[in-house]
Length: 212
Figure 1 (cartoon, rainbow, N blue to C red):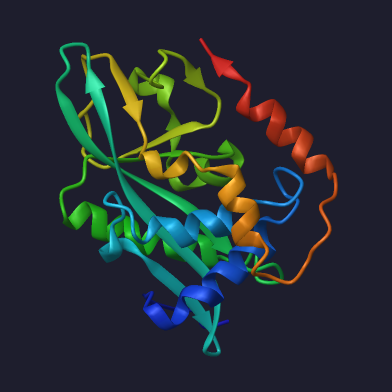
Figure 2: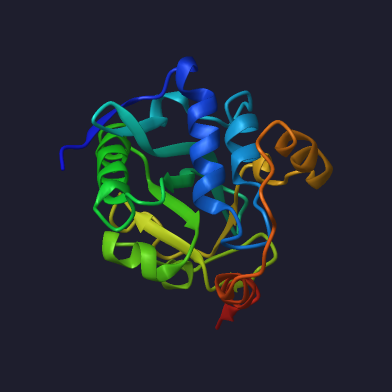
């Protein structure tokens, strides 16, 4: 299967939103909000359009990755800029075929070339450890509350950049979504039934789990 990766453009917007809705619907919660995140992130000041890519197979969009600015602060309030991707989406039917890996690798190369210190995300470790991500506790990076979430993962791009200090991670406020706005936005799409799936219980456990 030949995969083409290119920059997202305005003509892709609704296709990417529809694809994201299909990929995340009922996965982590009944329904989803990731398609709304895709919609609002593009106009947010933390959005990085130069790191916004789609993956195509036979001229069909089957994947997408988006990045936003984030940062860590040390114990002396020194700030270090980092990158965060999300959502990372692959259309059902094309998953587990290397498309997500291609999107991560493509954008990671750009991040390294641009001198980024690290990519920090919130996600399931089993999806990202194979790409070199480690839990943030290994770099002494907590969340803003001083805790070490199970799913807070770091891909260090500048070896040793975090060494010898304690850090707190701060993601973009774009991820703090208004659920009423999510529901209103979702009405623009064909109706889909919200259901419970076991993956939601797994997600619920993961987001409440901390290390150390």
